[in-house]
Length: 481
Image (cartoon, rainbow, N blue to C red; front, side, top):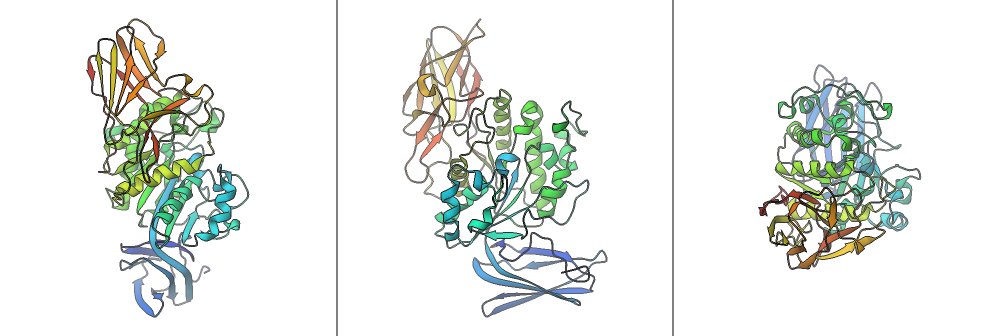
């Protein structure tokens, strides 16, 4: 409605999905003394009202709702009414990050089939915010298209590169929707911008976190393409959604911070904690994608820096180390990434016993005895281990992903692995000072676990360790347990 009527932020619209099982807040602006809302579902009706504050804002909180479809919300003030139709209550997710999260379904490797089948999943919905920067927090968002919320249809996916929706987010939610028997509506909000560093998604509070070194000024960089102002995407792409309820948060970002992994180790966890604090949900599940392999040495350290987030509670991840492309920073296989995020969410947000594991072989420790290095993986993540070439490999597994550095020598030497149960052994020819697996700019060969059921084949995480006798180099499995 116009300037004299009810003004709703554009994340609220017909066809939207709201989080079931929790009190749902809806807010807006009005120039009248009060606003009422009627919630209709079939023959059932519930009425709510709110006084309008001096600054013209109002907020209504619905009682916790069960899973349902065909809801109508009617907002009324002294100037008229606004109706939102086809509102669903189900599971709602928030997806953010840079270009690999923004990467759209119509660019995905299997996009033709995915788009043609989208009409079958009528209660899988999404809303995507447009690219907007703001110097101060704003209350509204700008949808990327001419309507806020979409349901699956060929027209809903657009025709241009980086149109909506996010392939990673769509694939993840599509897996969830199918797994739940298409009985539970699934929705996601996409709020991302390619080429942007974590600092732009972080509030002033996060950037001034004393555990990260205190106040951080806007960086000055030599390449104007990477010049940025801290917080301007937090203000526009995150802040407007802070009062919404989400089941979990998803994140795919890091490429723009790859040249500064040292600071990312702190900035990334600080951003997560700050988002949760401002959402008033300190244990809201947060899932991220570790960067795919690419011909960049900077990505090696950044992948390791991302793992610092696992020290926070309720943080999980999906590996993309085997899905990359040597020449393209935007690998097209987002279906695999979405499947792995789905597994992590299903196992940890929903405690699904059908997921045997959501990650592949996870390092427990390394032991050196004589001329043998024994790499021990956690038994619950290492099952039926095998090696296979990654998606864009050239030499593939003709070259081992396991490398050692002998004392007094700076050259890395590849050692063929012997794989048995949850153990990998390497035959050495001298005293080793360092050992690593898949710790290189482009990984040609990956170690996998083969699980039954939903989990399927899952890759091992890269590692690097200095060795002396027995090295406790345990990977945190996740912090979601």
